[in-house]
Length: 215
Image (cartoon, rainbow, N blue to C red; front, top):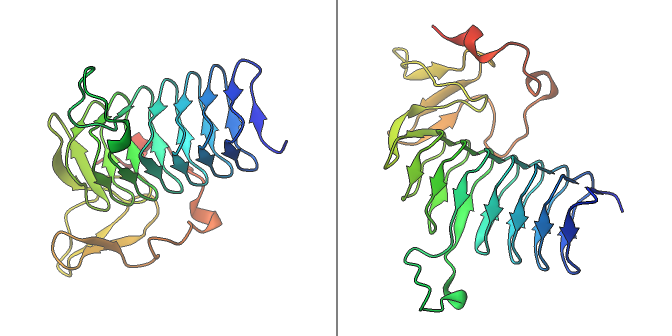
């Protein structure tokens, strides 16, 4: 076995788990779930069957990932965040054949205690703040805060709120130096690195605390 499962956790027959993934205390992976390589699941996580999870996904304590959820590479799920799979649940009405798809795209971060209502797409490198409630699609790189979640600015791949654009419309991440621009309006793109490309090694390890970059 080329992945780690703590003795208190269970992986049902028929689940597929990639190399280097770690499942810590009291986790349960159901049959039919597909988990990529180098993922980490904290204490008390549940991964339902027919869930697909990419590589290098980090899931903190107390997170349930329900059927209908697709998680791409490099996604972060904060402690006790909530994902759902039926918009209008009723105990009396069986909707097991009607689970709605929720897509978390590459590099997205979902903060602690945030809720993502099913049937939405969270864009690449979007950042959902702690405690927010998301009930509609979120653009790439968008910072979403509050209840209901509202757009509050743009975030860099390194998790920093981007400053106001210069006269050319360019915004620069204070940590990485990567440049970003809206083109067209409402669609942010990195000018220096393709959204599907991994970070170069020299940018893949943080070297200073978040407060260092506050102005």
